[in-house]
Image (tube, rainbow, N blue to C red; front, top):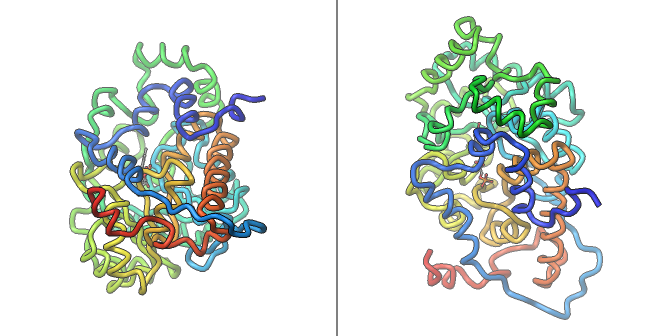
Length: 390
Ligand SMILES: Cc1cc2nc3c(=O)[nH]c(=O)nc-3n(C[C@H](O)[C@H](O)[C@H](O)COP(=O)(O)O)c2cc1C
């Protein structure tokens, strides 16, 4: 039995990733802003929700497949955009995109990815989603949207909760950069993690390739870092959805919604779907968990748009709780990153398979055969959720 096969939970994969990935890149994934309060709440609040157990139901022919934005999916999840995935493992975005394709779910490529839109398109056969950060350099952003369109990306995920960067103490303490600086400490790390180092030496993809070579003023690493730091557009607003949507010509999913009023504004301004998200607890520390605000956002716009959510999903049970509270589907960030760190493409597939099995068994024990029927009737009522501290 391989080490990956012995991993039974996402936490097992996380521990494997911790052993295989250099500390600065493992910590980059396993971190939240400031006190990490929101990062922790994202996971903890799932535990406050309890399932209704129903028995004596015919459980033959169970179904986990569904649709997201009209596209068939093997399970109602998508891989969330995770910047610098190619530092967790060499060519990480390509590996994760391939795993998503094999599994039958969408993969989202971050603007701040190591592998470029073109790299992923050349190494996959199905359309993926592209996540857009709006930057001050408008001509660059227009070209980026055009590149996503040319690569036949099937949706644009417009992230609106990162006009300025939340502070993650671990990254500052670790002196995080991509590619890493060859300090004595980092060289010692590479010797302790030779598999990672060996694979990284075998690829030329070690910097932000959506940007590098596409911006005149960001030709080397230090100018690229400086360009990126000063580029996030502080004036981003609801009206921007319209021109982005028009330029892309396909569906735009607005990500980073944590408030019912913002959800209404996103829909009024043309969002084709929204992602209830606090960026995995990496931006506004002290904001509520995503699962906590999901019900009120579904109440506000659930009949007008598809409401997806992300933040804190670590198991099939968590996914089912999100669906029970009205999400159409969920994005998973760290599940993918831990799987990738634990074992590359096979590790991401293992992570997805763990979630699939947990979802199937849990759904059956709840007395359900079809994931599309999961709803509020599967958990103790929202009143109970409230009494449990929501
Ligand atoms: C290491 C890391 C990098 C991320 N980078 C991005 C990014 O580039 N763009 C973006 O929209 N969200 C980014 N996110 C947020 C994720 O898309 C997603 O909202 C979050 O990971 C969901 O929480 P989960 O990790 O608990 O599943 C990042 C998250 C992590 C953990």
